[in-house]
Length: 366
Image (cartoon, rainbow, N blue to C red; front, side, top):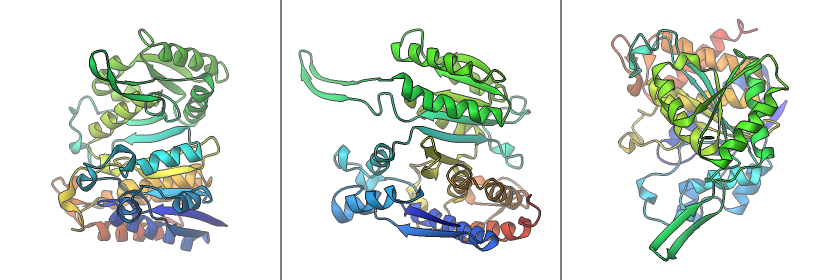
C-alpha cells in the first residue's frame, strides 16, 4: 500500500521534530511493508521568507493532492511584526479552508510515568486524565467575517460568531462515533444562556444524540467547564465544542497534564483526511532551537492519529503509542519532561529509542 504525504517542516523546532517523525514513518514502512511517499513542501515561515506568502499555490496544490499533511511548529518572533495575512500560521488556516476540514481532535492524557509533572494535586488526578477534545474548526468567529476600522466612537472591530446546523453535525458525528469506542460519554460545551450560536449548538447536539442512544450526553456552560476540568478531569471522556471554546479548553487541558509536548493533534474532514501537527503548534521557547533539546513526541503521536484516522491503520497507530510509552517507562525523557529518576536524552536520541521500541514491540501488537 502506498500513501502520499505532504510535509511542511515548519518553523523554530519544526524541522527537528518532523525529522524524527519521518524516521518513525520509515520504521513503520519497514515493519509492515507500506510505502509512505513524503514530499517536502515549502510553507509557513520558510515560504514567507522565500516567496512573501505562507502557502504558495504550488505548495497548496501538493497538499490537496496528498493523502495527509504533516506540519511542524508554526511561527516565531521573527515574523511578529509582519501583516496578519503574511504570518506563517496563515498556512494552516489556508489549508483548513482548501481541504474543508471540519473537526480538530486533541487527545489529552496523563502519562502514568510522568504524573508528577501535572500541576494538579494528586487526589484530583488519582483516577487519571483521558479526554478526547472534539473541536469544530469550520465555524465560529475564527472562520467568519471580520471587520476592523473606524466608526462613531473611533476604532472598532467585530468578529461574527456564525454557525449553521450542517457545520455542527460534522463535529457532533465525530464526537458520538468516538464515544462509542471509549466510555459512551459526550460532554457538550457551549454558552447557550447568552449566545444564539450556542443555543443552536445545543439543539443540534441533542438532536444528533437521538441517533446514539447508548451515549450519555451532558451539557456544560464554557465558564463552568473551564473550572470542572481542573476540579475533576476524570469525569470527562469526549468533549465536543465550538471553535473558540475548543481552542481555549484544549490548551487548558494540555497544560494540566504537565506533558503538553507529548500530545498530538489532528484536523480532519468527515473521511479522515487532514492535517496532523503537534498539540503545541506554536512552541514558545525559542532558546532551544537547533540544540537537540526539542521534544518530538507530540509530533510522533500525531502520526498515530494520521495512521488511525486517515489510513485506518489501527494496529500501526497503537504500535507507535505503545513504543512511546515503553521508552518513557524505561526512564528516557527529553529535558522538558525531566523528573527525578529519569534520564534526559536529546531530540535525535529519543527518536532512535522509539524506533528501537517499534521493532521490539511489533511482533506483540495484534
